[in-house]
Image 1 (cartoon, rainbow, N blue to C red):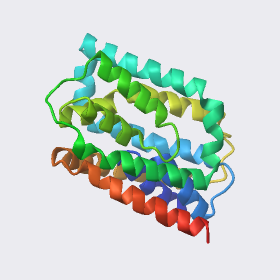
Image 2: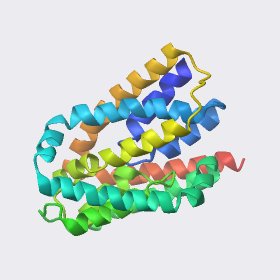
Image 3: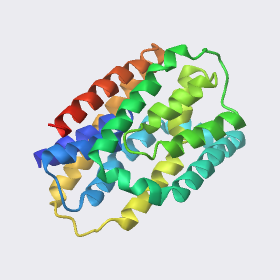
Image 4: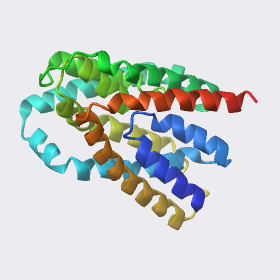
Length: 247
Protein backbone atom coordinates (compact mmCIF):
# COMPACT_ATOMS: atom_id res chain seq x y z
CA UNK A 1 0.00 0.00 0.00
CA UNK A 2 2.74 2.48 0.95
CA UNK A 3 4.45 1.98 -2.43
CA UNK A 4 1.19 2.79 -4.23
CA UNK A 5 0.75 5.96 -2.15
CA UNK A 6 4.31 7.05 -2.98
CA UNK A 7 3.72 6.49 -6.69
CA UNK A 8 0.37 8.32 -6.49
CA UNK A 9 2.05 11.34 -4.89
CA UNK A 10 4.83 11.29 -7.50
CA UNK A 11 2.29 11.05 -10.32
CA UNK A 12 0.18 13.90 -8.91
CA UNK A 13 3.13 16.25 -8.50
CA UNK A 14 5.20 15.41 -11.56
CA UNK A 15 2.32 15.15 -14.04
CA UNK A 16 1.93 18.93 -13.76
CA UNK A 17 5.31 20.14 -12.56
CA UNK A 18 7.70 20.42 -15.56
CA UNK A 19 9.87 17.50 -14.44
CA UNK A 20 8.34 14.58 -16.43
CA UNK A 21 5.92 12.24 -14.66
CA UNK A 22 6.79 9.31 -16.93
CA UNK A 23 10.48 9.74 -16.16
CA UNK A 24 9.92 9.93 -12.41
CA UNK A 25 7.59 6.93 -12.40
CA UNK A 26 10.14 4.85 -14.33
CA UNK A 27 12.81 5.83 -11.81
CA UNK A 28 10.53 5.38 -8.76
CA UNK A 29 9.44 1.92 -9.89
CA UNK A 30 13.10 1.03 -10.40
CA UNK A 31 14.07 1.96 -6.82
CA UNK A 32 10.88 0.66 -5.18
CA UNK A 33 11.36 -2.68 -6.89
CA UNK A 34 7.89 -2.63 -8.47
CA UNK A 35 7.64 -5.10 -11.32
CA UNK A 36 4.88 -6.95 -13.08
CA UNK A 37 1.83 -5.12 -14.41
CA UNK A 38 3.20 -1.58 -14.08
CA UNK A 39 1.34 -0.33 -17.18
CA UNK A 40 -2.00 -1.04 -15.50
CA UNK A 41 -0.81 0.79 -12.38
CA UNK A 42 0.29 3.82 -14.43
CA UNK A 43 -3.12 3.92 -16.11
CA UNK A 44 -4.92 3.93 -12.76
CA UNK A 45 -2.73 6.71 -11.34
CA UNK A 46 -3.41 8.84 -14.42
CA UNK A 47 -7.15 8.77 -13.61
CA UNK A 48 -6.43 10.91 -10.54
CA UNK A 49 -4.51 13.55 -12.47
CA UNK A 50 -7.08 13.65 -15.29
CA UNK A 51 -9.79 14.33 -12.70
CA UNK A 52 -7.59 17.06 -11.18
CA UNK A 53 -7.40 18.85 -14.55
CA UNK A 54 -11.18 18.78 -14.96
CA UNK A 55 -11.81 20.07 -11.44
CA UNK A 56 -9.09 22.77 -11.46
CA UNK A 57 -9.95 24.12 -14.95
CA UNK A 58 -13.71 23.44 -14.84
CA UNK A 59 -14.81 27.04 -15.60
CA UNK A 60 -12.11 27.47 -18.26
CA UNK A 61 -13.18 24.23 -19.95
CA UNK A 62 -16.81 25.39 -20.07
CA UNK A 63 -15.74 28.70 -21.65
CA UNK A 64 -13.57 26.88 -24.19
CA UNK A 65 -16.46 24.63 -25.23
CA UNK A 66 -18.51 27.75 -26.04
CA UNK A 67 -15.73 29.26 -28.17
CA UNK A 68 -15.48 27.84 -31.74
CA UNK A 69 -12.04 29.40 -32.26
CA UNK A 70 -10.67 27.76 -29.11
CA UNK A 71 -12.12 24.40 -30.12
CA UNK A 72 -10.35 24.75 -33.48
CA UNK A 73 -7.02 25.58 -31.82
CA UNK A 74 -7.32 22.57 -29.51
CA UNK A 75 -8.14 20.37 -32.52
CA UNK A 76 -4.91 21.50 -34.25
CA UNK A 77 -2.85 20.71 -31.15
CA UNK A 78 -4.44 17.29 -30.83
CA UNK A 79 -4.07 16.38 -34.51
CA UNK A 80 -0.35 17.22 -34.65
CA UNK A 81 0.33 15.43 -31.35
CA UNK A 82 -1.51 12.30 -32.56
CA UNK A 83 0.39 12.23 -35.87
CA UNK A 84 3.74 12.41 -34.03
CA UNK A 85 2.68 9.84 -31.45
CA UNK A 86 1.44 7.32 -34.02
CA UNK A 87 4.37 7.84 -36.40
CA UNK A 88 7.12 7.45 -33.81
CA UNK A 89 5.45 5.02 -31.37
CA UNK A 90 7.69 2.06 -32.22
CA UNK A 91 10.82 4.21 -32.13
CA UNK A 92 10.03 5.68 -28.72
CA UNK A 93 8.74 2.49 -27.06
CA UNK A 94 12.21 1.20 -25.97
CA UNK A 95 12.95 4.50 -24.18
CA UNK A 96 10.29 3.68 -21.56
CA UNK A 97 12.34 0.71 -20.45
CA UNK A 98 15.71 2.50 -20.21
CA UNK A 99 16.54 4.21 -16.92
CA UNK A 100 19.78 5.64 -18.39
CA UNK A 101 17.96 7.22 -21.34
CA UNK A 102 15.33 8.66 -19.01
CA UNK A 103 17.96 10.28 -16.79
CA UNK A 104 19.66 11.90 -19.79
CA UNK A 105 16.35 13.20 -21.13
CA UNK A 106 15.53 14.73 -17.73
CA UNK A 107 18.83 16.63 -18.03
CA UNK A 108 17.77 17.89 -21.46
CA UNK A 109 14.41 18.90 -20.00
CA UNK A 110 16.25 20.95 -17.36
CA UNK A 111 18.28 22.82 -19.98
CA UNK A 112 15.07 23.72 -21.87
CA UNK A 113 13.49 25.13 -18.70
CA UNK A 114 16.56 27.25 -17.93
CA UNK A 115 16.15 28.94 -21.32
CA UNK A 116 12.76 30.44 -20.35
CA UNK A 117 14.12 33.69 -18.75
CA UNK A 118 15.64 34.56 -22.14
CA UNK A 119 12.26 34.57 -23.88
CA UNK A 120 10.85 38.02 -24.58
CA UNK A 121 7.58 38.46 -22.70
CA UNK A 122 4.60 39.80 -24.63
CA UNK A 123 0.85 39.77 -24.12
CA UNK A 124 -0.40 37.67 -27.03
CA UNK A 125 -3.29 35.20 -27.09
CA UNK A 126 -2.78 31.76 -28.72
CA UNK A 127 -3.26 31.58 -32.50
CA UNK A 128 -2.94 28.99 -35.27
CA UNK A 129 0.87 28.95 -35.32
CA UNK A 130 1.04 28.75 -31.52
CA UNK A 131 -1.28 25.73 -31.60
CA UNK A 132 0.88 24.04 -34.22
CA UNK A 133 4.03 24.67 -32.16
CA UNK A 134 2.36 23.34 -29.01
CA UNK A 135 1.18 20.27 -30.90
CA UNK A 136 4.76 19.50 -31.92
CA UNK A 137 6.03 20.16 -28.38
CA UNK A 138 3.38 17.89 -26.90
CA UNK A 139 4.26 15.17 -29.39
CA UNK A 140 7.97 15.39 -28.54
CA UNK A 141 7.09 15.22 -24.83
CA UNK A 142 6.00 11.61 -25.32
CA UNK A 143 9.69 10.86 -24.71
CA UNK A 144 10.10 9.83 -21.02
CA UNK A 145 12.10 12.45 -19.17
CA UNK A 146 10.78 15.31 -21.32
CA UNK A 147 7.98 17.10 -19.48
CA UNK A 148 4.74 17.74 -21.39
CA UNK A 149 3.81 20.77 -19.29
CA UNK A 150 7.39 22.06 -19.30
CA UNK A 151 7.90 21.83 -23.05
CA UNK A 152 4.44 23.11 -24.03
CA UNK A 153 4.47 26.05 -21.61
CA UNK A 154 8.06 26.91 -22.61
CA UNK A 155 7.13 26.80 -26.30
CA UNK A 156 4.10 29.06 -25.75
CA UNK A 157 6.15 31.54 -23.72
CA UNK A 158 8.79 31.50 -26.47
CA UNK A 159 6.15 32.62 -29.00
CA UNK A 160 5.13 35.51 -26.74
CA UNK A 161 1.92 34.16 -25.17
CA UNK A 162 1.13 35.87 -21.85
CA UNK A 163 2.10 33.76 -18.86
CA UNK A 164 -1.28 32.97 -17.34
CA UNK A 165 -2.73 32.21 -20.77
CA UNK A 166 0.19 29.89 -21.58
CA UNK A 167 -0.51 27.99 -18.34
CA UNK A 168 -4.24 27.74 -19.06
CA UNK A 169 -3.96 26.86 -22.77
CA UNK A 170 -1.22 24.29 -22.17
CA UNK A 171 -3.47 22.22 -19.92
CA UNK A 172 -6.86 22.76 -21.58
CA UNK A 173 -5.48 21.96 -25.04
CA UNK A 174 -3.78 18.86 -23.64
CA UNK A 175 -7.01 17.24 -22.40
CA UNK A 176 -7.87 15.30 -25.63
CA UNK A 177 -4.29 14.02 -25.96
CA UNK A 178 -4.09 13.02 -22.29
CA UNK A 179 -7.43 11.18 -22.45
CA UNK A 180 -6.42 9.55 -25.75
CA UNK A 181 -3.12 8.34 -24.29
CA UNK A 182 -4.98 7.08 -21.21
CA UNK A 183 -7.48 5.09 -23.31
CA UNK A 184 -4.68 3.65 -25.45
CA UNK A 185 -2.71 2.53 -22.40
CA UNK A 186 -5.87 1.16 -20.80
CA UNK A 187 -6.52 -0.95 -23.90
CA UNK A 188 -2.94 -2.26 -23.85
CA UNK A 189 -2.88 -2.91 -20.10
CA UNK A 190 -3.43 -6.32 -18.56
CA UNK A 191 -6.48 -5.94 -16.33
CA UNK A 192 -5.35 -8.81 -14.15
CA UNK A 193 -3.67 -6.45 -11.71
CA UNK A 194 -1.41 -7.73 -8.98
CA UNK A 195 -2.60 -4.98 -6.59
CA UNK A 196 -5.61 -4.89 -4.26
CA UNK A 197 -8.64 -2.73 -5.10
CA UNK A 198 -8.10 -0.70 -1.91
CA UNK A 199 -4.49 0.00 -2.85
CA UNK A 200 -5.42 1.10 -6.37
CA UNK A 201 -8.22 3.42 -5.16
CA UNK A 202 -5.83 4.92 -2.63
CA UNK A 203 -3.32 5.54 -5.42
CA UNK A 204 -5.95 7.32 -7.55
CA UNK A 205 -7.07 9.48 -4.60
CA UNK A 206 -3.45 10.35 -3.78
CA UNK A 207 -2.61 11.32 -7.37
CA UNK A 208 -5.75 13.51 -7.51
CA UNK A 209 -4.98 15.31 -4.25
CA UNK A 210 -1.34 15.96 -5.10
CA UNK A 211 -2.34 16.92 -8.64
CA UNK A 212 -4.64 19.67 -7.33
CA UNK A 213 -1.86 20.97 -5.09
CA UNK A 214 0.64 20.91 -7.96
CA UNK A 215 -1.64 22.89 -10.29
CA UNK A 216 -2.15 25.59 -7.67
CA UNK A 217 1.57 25.89 -6.98
CA UNK A 218 2.44 25.84 -10.66
CA UNK A 219 0.06 28.71 -11.47
CA UNK A 220 1.70 30.85 -8.77
CA UNK A 221 5.22 29.99 -9.96
CA UNK A 222 4.44 30.88 -13.58
CA UNK A 223 2.90 34.22 -12.63
CA UNK A 224 5.87 35.01 -10.37
CA UNK A 225 8.29 34.16 -13.22
CA UNK A 226 9.93 31.35 -11.23
CA UNK A 227 8.82 28.51 -13.49
CA UNK A 228 12.34 28.10 -14.90
CA UNK A 229 13.70 27.12 -11.46
CA UNK A 230 12.50 23.57 -12.07
CA UNK A 231 15.33 23.39 -14.57
CA UNK A 232 17.90 23.29 -11.77
CA UNK A 233 16.01 20.47 -10.10
CA UNK A 234 15.90 18.44 -13.34
CA UNK A 235 19.62 18.84 -13.96
CA UNK A 236 20.52 17.93 -10.37
CA UNK A 237 18.11 14.99 -10.37
CA UNK A 238 19.38 13.67 -13.68
CA UNK A 239 23.03 13.88 -12.59
CA UNK A 240 22.36 12.15 -9.25
CA UNK A 241 20.35 9.40 -10.89
CA UNK A 242 23.03 8.77 -13.52
CA UNK A 243 25.61 8.57 -10.72
CA UNK A 244 23.61 5.90 -8.88
CA UNK A 245 23.01 3.94 -12.09
CA UNK A 246 26.73 3.87 -12.82
CA UNK A 247 27.85 2.82 -9.31
